[in-house]
Image (cartoon, rainbow, N blue to C red):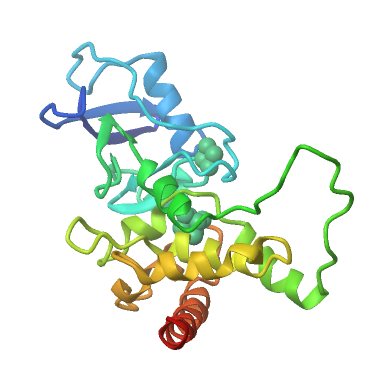
Length: 254
Ligand code: SF4
Ligand code: FES
């Protein structure tokens, strides 16, 4: 019997401004392969299905266990993490099913499947998504947190900055400039931190600005697509309320 193979169609682009082309590869099947191992197989012998010599495919990856958030891409048209996307599952029992790979569509392509997601980090800077700490002297142990607060904060701290919530959001586009669900969730995380809450008001004002929380159309795609199951819609509702309260306060104290 002929050896089982997997056909993979990859949308490629050699540089940021270059025209995209599609290349198809056929690689030997192994049980329990994920998309990262499949891309590794292509790199070992980068030759298209027609026998044309090609090059290894460029993509971001690091942890290989859905922790670093770098390997997000469109797999069979859906935004997913390459390291946790299993070939058997993607083929759904149809061994002849071609797997398609493409870069995330809402971010500038750097090369092949690697995109520039720095917009997320710029948005996190806008809301100061950190705990401001003076590291020049020993601060001792941090303030105690009530277990109920810890329980609310922990799921939000699982964000891996993969940007999938932004990719799937209809409001995340050049017209709205919407910051996206991840930034809103991190605002809640740091506003609930006993030390981080010192910047709470500034964060809420930043979320009230251009591209802020008011751009959310509550499509709820984000909460369904998030690979770490962050309670995104709850975070958006909570921040929406807090932004409103902050705006009222600011109105009366102007
Ligand atoms: S909120 Fe979820 S989907 Fe969005 S960046 Fe964080 S982990 Fe990824
Ligand atoms: S390689 Fe780190 S999340 Fe996939």
